[in-house]
Length: 408
Image (cartoon, rainbow, N blue to C red; front, top):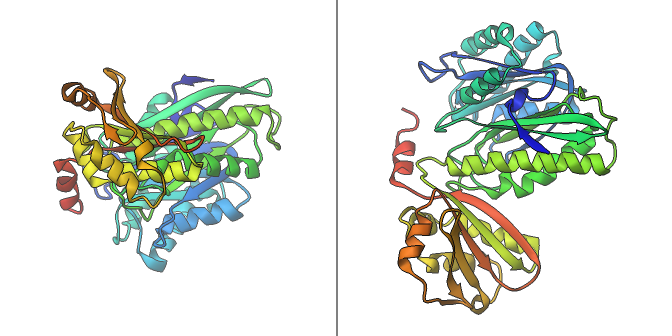
């Protein structure tokens, strides 16, 4: 497996396009289309929020009931959430417009929206934008990158990646793009993610692989503790790599799972690092937990603590806040066994706590480590053999500024 260029267009048969439809933003592209020249097997995971946006309802039905999927239309600026029957009708109108021009069924067209909740989409602009994108479809790297920029809201940069691996003696490609910066919390976040592959794989295994990997990637990030109404991750597999169809968990399936994890982890960490107002990626590893569930709960409790996030922003080695966050997580452990470390790629590792008590560490070195762009805290609770890693970011003044006037 190796990283390659191309984003969502790295896999054979996939094309993208984008336009400035004027949905909310002025002077920038705000709609994108992703299209496969042949039908795809499609799998997806969606928000756990009881309040689900219309596109989530539309896409979930396609994933569960449609014979195939072949395109997705994405808009930024308005979420099409809490919009009732009219909002769902707009999903259908968008899919029909795309389907007619692409000569595919409307139920083979997914839709995705991100932005302000409660506003109705300007459907005339959505349909016009959809029609304008069809003749612009291209399989180039530039087109993929432009599409990844079109779906951003408060993101400060686009997020895309691709890998190449081998299955059945054939070269296979897997690419992905996503957006996400705020309203991000475990169990899916305010994110839209789109993955493409030319692998031939059964729909059942495609769904299982995605659902399982989400647990260790997108479900392990948090920016602000708010779970969105629109969270969607879709993966499209069109089989153009020409490998023998994967219908069982064999060596080829294992290679696909490995590549899928690499894509999802990169995108998940990119979102955490690009949290609204963030200056640092904050990684938390819990080692030697009783079981995976305990490790997950403890690591998530730390990355979601406002006090911990504020300390990370201030490069303050206030380790008591980390132990405190672990302590109120609901998980039982012996605090007098906990070892706590911080580290960065630039300045190495420093132990702050040994068996629940502070070490004679250098505050100067601790501050230097915590001043890096990517900071890791490692908690060894010496209970079992399980571990988990979660990703978040620091909490800055700019987070409040961004969200105080988001609608205006």
